[in-house]
Amino acid sequence: MNRKYNLHIMASFAIFLILADQLTKWIIVKSMDIGDSIPVIGDILEITSHRNHGAAWGMLQNQMMFFYLITVVVLVAIAYFYRKEASYKPVMQLGLTLVFAGAIGNFIDRLFRGNVVDFIDTKIINYDFPIFNVADACLTVGVIILIYDILVNENKEKKNADI
Ligand SMILES: CCC[C@@H]1OC(=O)[C@@H](C)C[C@H](C)CCCCC(=O)CCC[C@@H](CC)/C=C/C=C(\COC)CC[C@@H](O)[C@@H](O)C[C@H](O)CNC1=O
Image (cartoon, rainbow, N blue to C red; front, side):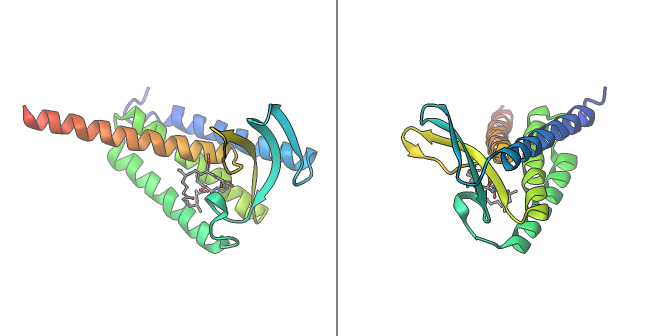
């Protein structure tokens, strides 16, 4: 098994996440009208059919060319860091894979729908969090994993340097 980059595992995981993202969005588009809402766990978790023409929190509405550009930059950066920085670092590889899958998932929406399908409607500690999707969750978890891994690794390097 290629432990240096775990490419087979990470590529399979990315494909699974992208398919899960696109399948859930397809089901929402086919079975709900925009604005429809189905309670799942009281008003803490609902499935609400929503479209976002912008980025997080609806920022930069209808700036599709900007989103295409940013997404391509993100994808190129992921490929670069995966090759240059992530060898023998499975945690960093996982974080990069999650960000990659999330970026591709929303990129497909932007290319073929002109907007992004959102449906996970949660109230986190009474804060009405923006409605998001599987791709956003992948991006957010991936970013958190990468920040954690960089902080932990930096800490280790400092300790080794102090010895
Ligand atoms: C998750 C990044 C947003 C995602 O970026 C993408 O596609 C990337 C690949 C391309 C963007 C054009 C560029 C990144 C902008 C960075 C950004 O925006 C800062 C965000 C911080 C983030 C921590 C990492 C918080 C979290 C937010 C949310 C996610 O909660 C789980 C709420 C999501 C809802 O507002 C939902 O309507 C959004 C809609 O689905 C479109 N999604 C996007 O633009």
